[in-house]
Image (tube, rainbow, N blue to C red):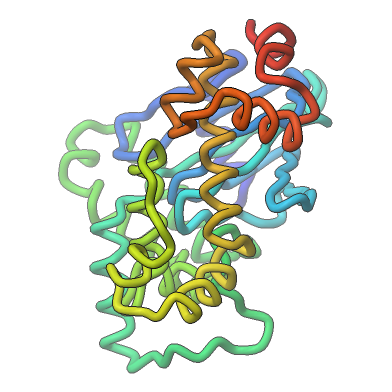
Length: 292
């Protein structure tokens, strides 16, 4: 089995430029033929498997390039800028986007840790940051191909969907990003839980002390572990999430002041100042240049 077989399955379903939902829970297929400049986005826990072409992501001020040699794992909600600046009709971006079922992933991560007696110590080269990559291997390729085949038969889909997803998740947990996934979904996933809470309360004032108390850590330990997981301080993380969400809302046509209030800014001047510092444009300029 190889990536070309997966690309053929995608081509059968996605005939034009764009992304489509499949009947498989959390699975979307995409094919892009137009150049897309990097723009603010918020990644949810997910896996992006590129079978052809490449994409770019910027997070915490650093640029990362991805192609079909690796798949991308996002283990927690992350503020990011992403695009496909090298995509053309002759060199399209083709792949699969899978939103992770957190309950299924948590159950499997804990089951694996229990069965293997896994420790919480990272091996050299492993990390637990929110965005990581893993080299494609035969296990992942086979599991993804078998999952996508379910689209061809409604009975197979109804009977086998959960087991095929479980096989794919198992391949993820055994891959190079497995340590990050186990840290996010297995025993001791306190930072991932605090990020999930933050992401759903962006329009509220939440202090570091409250977050640390919620998961039973001191402020100093929480701050250190949070930065290890996201490469950002909690304050930087919240600001990036808020501004990315606001930029996305403005791009969709939301009024600037409404977008600011929606993500928790009480001061329009502070919002404009921080927005321009991050994106190089004022919110109004952003709306004029980015709104379709």
